[in-house]
Length: 430
Ligand code: S3P
Image 1 (tube, rainbow, N blue to C red):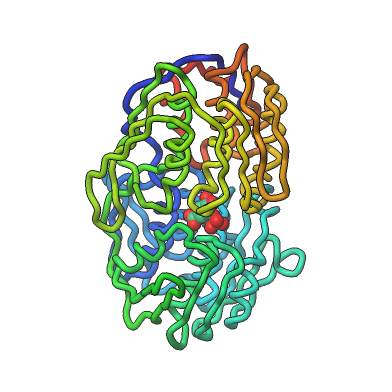
Image 2 (cartoon, rainbow, N blue to C red):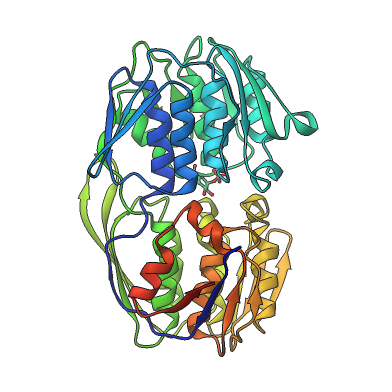
């Protein structure tokens, strides 16, 4: 079992090797199956979560090869019924999106994951997919993986009003809708990240939104292949943004990120708290892309309860900024945190308390009062974002911080430790 020991430091510099975007990379692996020609992308995320999705694409018949920086995925003529369980590892995105696609494919498919993923709710996709004609079963009435799916190659067209703003649910249903027997509609309570809509439209799918309902036309022919550079992941970069914001004298430039508005809300909150945050837009093809510059500023407490789907992944790291801010911060409307890779309300609050910070769980968020951080020995709860958030907290803590079970970081950001050290951080792997 790997653990990190860390101590205070000031990070600074430019980072042009932040992990590639996880959401977009999963979609590359999955959507490439919808074309009849090879997809070629550069900068695919080579981390456990997205490699699991790529391995599943292969198990379904795709041929994958690498040529220098390029990844090529040659789709099968038809999706193959795999002879083994499809292993999604730790990735909720992989499991939920494949559930959507395979619900609309002829055959029997079993999706499973690690012990953390198999404890996360799947009813949110299983129920609507069943209602359009797929058979989806799993533990506890289909709520937990392993999920057994018997797909229906012609799902019923639908109008689904989702109770949850989830890009995973939206994407699962859009994928199934591409094969339905007529145009389908999907609505969510607030806009979740929209990479699926952008990428599928870029591939030629007819997906329209009137700002509320998304209308999806079934495919009349295979889609165009994907060909682009995957941008860096603003959620992975955000750990270093917080590092700059909380340490006097620090300034960090995070390069070539997607600046998709559904992904950079946490940076806007950091700016509201008093950090110096500047966005530099470089290009705007399917996704706006550019650099983000972050510098220290005296931070003050903040209330966060809007656009939650746009910053849900960054809340554990934002909690570290809140622990370093003057006054009390409150996060609400974030009950989704309870069903992420760990219950992030509990794991964040417990670890902050261990560090001597006043923090309180709320049913749908937390309350944090800024103060002096003390080093402690902390659990990662098997959750990559908890491990990396508290590695950032160590930068301003007194004494030696220890974080246990850090192998989970490899699910999204294998180079995190190396970049942390390169920017001046003191991190030892044991
Ligand atoms: C993701 C969507 C979000 C996010 C997750 C990645 C995606 O989850 O938290 O890390 O790539 O679609 P939900 O859609 O469940 O909110």
